[in-house]
Image (cartoon, rainbow over the protein chains, first blue to last red):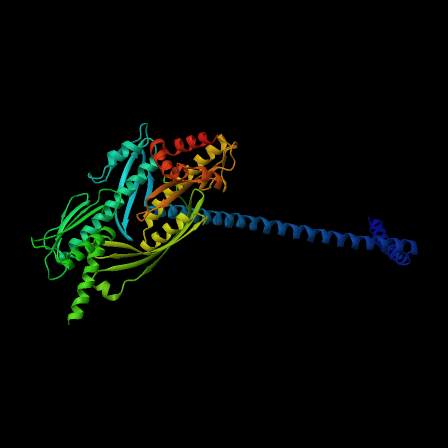
Length: 289
Length: 212
């Protein structure tokens, strides 16, 4: 045991010496080995550089892909919003255009059975009443419901055109209703605004195509006027007669006045004629005073 | 569209005209500016109009205070007078009604003329093409004689559209000298009577027949 121990220590010391010798020897390597080592070292450094470069590239590509995928989701959303907005604008525009049709005087709305047509009327820029006709699209075409006044010849117009030419039916009705609205407007204005000129009540029928009244424009006696609108599609009378009230013969001046009035009633709307009478009166009053 | 009109664009602007006094009396006044573009067959129109809407406690009144109409094509001279009248009267609906019937008559005139041109290509000629307002009939045997049918579409004061057909005989001077019975002079009247009896197509057919 002692010998082993001694040899152990000795051996250890010898080993250390040997190690030192070996180390010394290594530091005195031949140039070939050194060269080889330096070459390997360079290669190692080169490989490390390449590895770092590749790592960086991978990282960069990963980042770009992430950004791109984020951007494309954003892009999709913007495109979708823009598409929705465009669709909304288009819908509003179509709705507006459908509304605009009523300015043509004839507009329609689809119903479960067919179509409901709205006819608008106007006279001299004044928008007046609207009427509707509810049509059922069947063979034969029929009118389900309507708001046309009973004295308008709806059945006659329907018998003539409804089955063969729907457009013609609608436009004929349009003509008749607009003319009636115009005549009614004139009669209403006479009864309202110019009632002062009337010496008796205005006699009118529901169709407003036969009017009879007595009126006075100055200090002399009154006239009786009879206006007949034989054509139901017109707003100016087809036949006018102005006759003097009273039994005395007409003076030349009065006859001139009578004839002038007759011509006026034939060519100008009723309320316009009375408006001109009112203006004349104003003028004569101002001249007198 | 149901009515034969197609509206392609519409815009509206609203302006409040209510004054303080109006508000006190419970009256509201609004100015609307409308612009409509569209077409009726081959005719395109662009309208700009203003409506003043006055709302009081008792009623609402809407009045068209201004109307401007632009139409294309502008060759239809009969239409331009009608358009000016509609603008003057601010009668929007009369404009559309008149336009509808005018276009209908134009199309009917074109169909009728084209029908006769196709049926008798050597005798009939349309100087202005299918939308021509006149049709010439020239017989092969006597090419110096020509009957010209003028078909105008007139729009009256109330916006009613009526066709006006006239016959213009084109006769060389020597033939006129030979015409002792004055047939050429009475031809236009005879034409109008014939229209009353045979209608437009029947009359044209018989005239073409007489020239062949």
